[in-house]
Length: 451
Image (cartoon, rainbow, N blue to C red; front, side, top):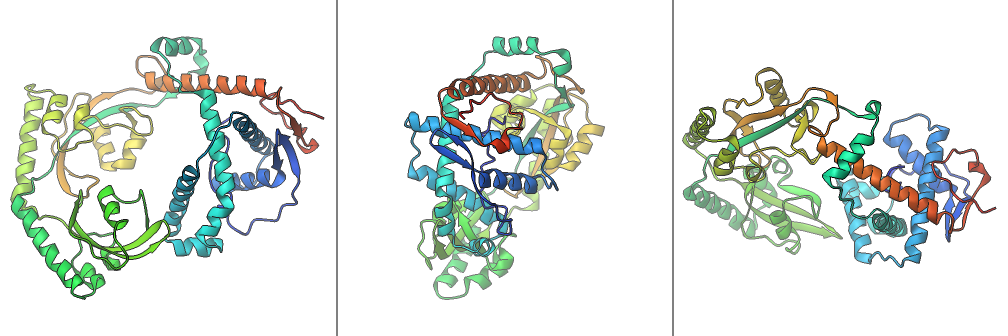
């Protein structure tokens, strides 16, 4: 059973409006919570679309049914334990999900056209479902607790695994980088602010911001649309941008403000519930070619110090790197998918295919690459050197090389046991009735069935 709580936590209606009508009935009761056949079928239709499958097997249908039994049991116990979900929590989750789908469809108008209803109506219809999902999540977190295993417990888990059950680990690499950005002079900052202020005054005096943005904004994502971003919701933009967007009144023009991308000013076009439509103009301080070359020469010198053994790569990263996210970690890049410094080549390829070629064909462990061009998340030109710290060959998982993977496996098993023990205990003291339609299912747990 998936310990991330049974349901994928997608909207009940995300499969669109053309789904077939389901003749509904109660197929199970858990405590005071009925389960409808439509719940089972809706979740099956979601899985079918997500996995792009033509048919759902009987076993998959039974698993969805059992997952929903688990959710109902969690809700039943949450009621007994007086677990509460605040309205603000429900609102935040609804907004987060709507933001995701608005982003996929392009705007709130397109979202409402797709579903044939206003967002406010959509929220009202889903509120109870989302609240129940959050209650079930809180109950499950209470059952599993915060799993913290010691190295000794991880080793004990590892020693209990049969050799045939050890996972095969692909080749993994640890890589670091040192980034050098060309310095931005105070004169360049003053010049771009003065230029941007002249455009701002033209807008304040009545000129079309759309035209000025199309002519002068350096934001490739919005300049062609007259600087316009539609349906901006919290969490989509950098914090400095959002702070201004959600503070202004419609029609108001902001002062100049700074983000990691450069300097902006903004006008709010409309406010629509939890989102805003805005126009903005972005300009970045100009960096001379001389400064660009100077940054490269500096990084070349840093590389020579590392290669000659005069300074360790990790110390050089801390002292010289412009990348605030990695310099404190000795320059090592953290793989967010694995919560570790280890990357598979395929994962590196998702960032940079050229980097994969260099690591595979040109570098050995301990090598430091030549200085190469780099564009970071702020879309600004920089230089970097790559360090290949380690490379493993494909192998069976072991404690020395794969501790984090084994820790995650051991934590999962600990949580699964907590869930199993809890279901075994609570199913004996909770009223559970299952419709005969599902009697043929081979369920993972021994649910108590009350005739």
